[in-house]
Length: 176
Image (cartoon, rainbow, N blue to C red; front, side, top):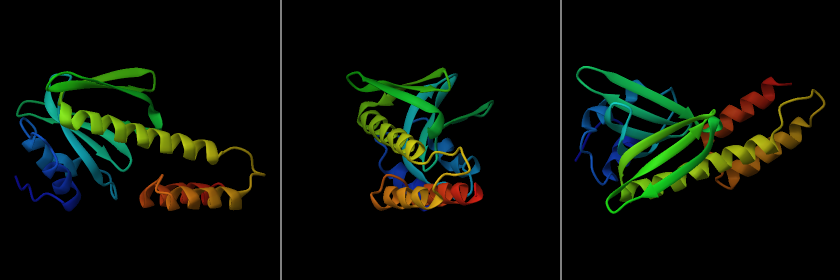
């Protein structure tokens, strides 16, 4: 099904095994994205009071439900996610995200989408942890050149996106 929303959203929507209960959310997704944020993967699921859309972006995980009577948006920045659990059944499964001491369980994610979603989310978390440990942010005497070199290596190996690279580079330079 063609949505014609935005190239990144359309590409992610094309890979969905089912768009049942999420067509309105796919259309509304650009309204909740930040400037420069891109969508990498989508999945449908149930969280809170209803069926909605789970979006993995370049910077965060978003759950969007846009019903006639109510709307719900909850986001989880990758830096706040401590772990992810996936448990799959015969046709669907549950993704549990632990973030900032809280637990969010998104249920009824199609099995084909859920496993890949969990794996890619773990990859984002690992890349963020590697970046955080490689780039300490305290102490005025730190080697800015070394931090920038580490950042360049992370981008070159694909551990971070160009957007994440630019964001972290700006943070490093602003810390001088």
